[in-house]
Amino acid sequence: MNILVTNDDGIASPGLWALAEALMDTGNVIVVSPDREQSGVGCAVTLHHPVRVDNVLSPLDGIKAYTVEGTPGDSVVLASTTIIKERIDLLVSGINHGSNLGNDVFVSGTVGAAFHGYFRGIPSMAISVTSLTDVRFDAASMVTRLLAQLFKDGKLPKELLLNVNVPNIPTKDLKGIRVTSLGRNSYTEIVETGSDPRRKYHWIKRTQPAWELEDGTDIFAVENQYISISPLNTDITDKHLLSILGDIELHLHV
Ligand code: MN
Image (tube, rainbow, N blue to C red; front, side, top):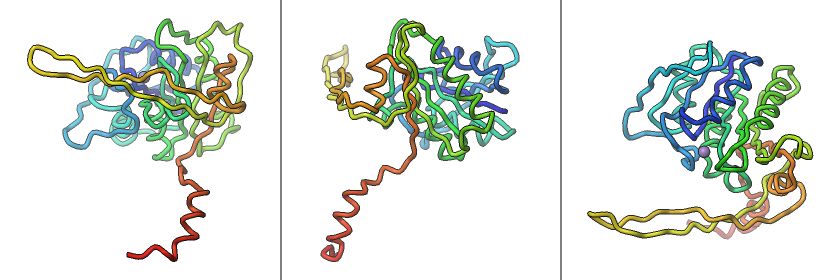
């Protein structure tokens, strides 16, 4: 089984190598990741300038690794079309430093890479730990191995997109694993303006989101010390609005 490992935190991120190491016994791991920090770029692809690929010396024996001078999406596109000649059986993105819960999936480069895998028919998973500092990889590695093995054993379908979030607490304090829906969180971006020697600049900062703690959601699970596994797809059509607009369709004229 060929496993593509990627991320959005860049090739130097400890989480990337923890993930590669976690999957080494399950399959043939190939690392293709952005050459630098790309958090928050979502599903972006680079269309207006060329993208370079470089071999890198892997810290793990027997694992081939490449950097892409671009986004996580670019990494998946190049890995699956150009870099890796064999079929990619599974894509795993992470281990991200920081949670990707609820609406974060629309902004996250970690999940963005998994979306690109899914778009290409590659079973894909995104793995995140809920802290930006002192990130623990033990439980995230364990659940990733578990899911990869389940997939390898044919217990999970090929049409697969999973968003996994792991609380950043000691494994002994985890209460278990919950299969969840995406919760609702709303960010209020704030902007800090300053000036450098030449001109003004603006820093867009994400604040702590307002969360709805609804049972059954990813947000609720991690808040209550459970690992959250959310199965996703790309159908974001609003069925309710579709029906309302359907009813007034006859009145819509051009
Ligand atoms: Mn990230």
